[in-house]
Length: 415
Ligand SMILES: Nc1ncnc2c1ncn2[C@@H]1O[C@H](COP(=O)(O)O)[C@@H](O)[C@H]1OP(=O)(O)O
Ligand SMILES: [Mg+2]
Ligand SMILES: [Mg+2]
Ligand SMILES: [Mg+2]
Image 1 (cartoon, protein in one colour):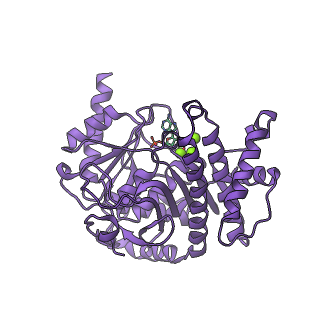
Image 2: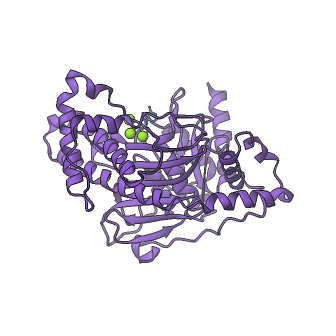
Image 3: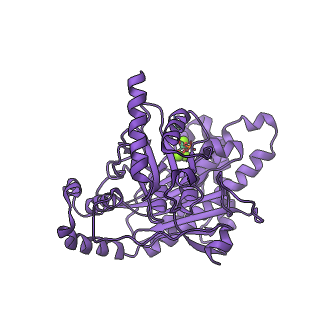
């Protein structure tokens, strides 16, 4: 099925990257991250690159993207799909429960740990010959306490039930200890050496509890660079969302976005039955662009985003949804801009952006901090970003950066 029939909307294919010149921010971002994968001392060279140096870079970039990562991608898709099944089951039960238990945090806790345990177990089963390193959001500390024993039992049952329904079921029944070990395999610190899986077992917990958007976000880092990413978005409609959304006959939900370095971004239904290549919007007139931001005002300043959007000339109201589903929606052109400005002092984590970033960049978009620097996933669990994270296409990035800079300066001088 082609893009149009699956999404019910027209997508414009963005031109394949041009490696012949390195003057744009997007190219700067690609070269910086590609270089950092091969030489830790080379990242600073990107800013002084010009065309006569392109040749050796081309060789590096192509040898990098020719590494296949095929079996890793297959394993990641299987793991995220299974985790999504577990989470959907819990969310459904949560939404059917009475008001009292909706305010009870335990269902989301069970789904969060269950998702992390499942992904950890699946990756190790599917890739037995590879050294396993996982940087994940949760750890088993609370589950090892006396007060966590009931929750641990519920998680273990849920993981066993989900695995029992898996097609190529090959696990014997897991004990509570097996589940604790699987969760704690996510204790790696990441970094610039070797390979590390990066997992947010439920991204957008607030959305999960509300019955809205959330994602299972899984990526692979190789020498500090994101080389593949998978975003399972169980509640995201297959049809386009966004403020310019046209009426769609399809109300099917459940998308799996996946991307591999140098290979583009694809979206498939969560049951795997149809898949399509996706591209970011090619819009170059801000008046026709719409933008995404967090549903939760505590996660990202809505005021600052609206100042930036106004300065840029965006007419449409913001589209507010939870989680990295925003990156997925942007990768298929539902909107053209994503603005994220957390409160001062909040430190972004790699699992909140790694999968989303490659899904968008492989679809032709640019992800940077508010100063235009590419995100650096090689420094451990945290991302050191300047002020915020902005995402858009190549056409809009220069004017977006200008609007962001002006808005931040105005904000600073009004304090
Ligand atoms: N105070 C905060 N500021 C910004 N982001 C936050 C904050 N607290 C949690 N988050 C994380 O923000 C992401 C979701 O943001 P949003 O849905 O608004 O885009 C999640 O990764 C969420 O973590 P979590 O994975 O635990 O849900
Ligand atoms: Mg998160
Ligand atoms: Mg999370
Ligand atoms: Mg969390």
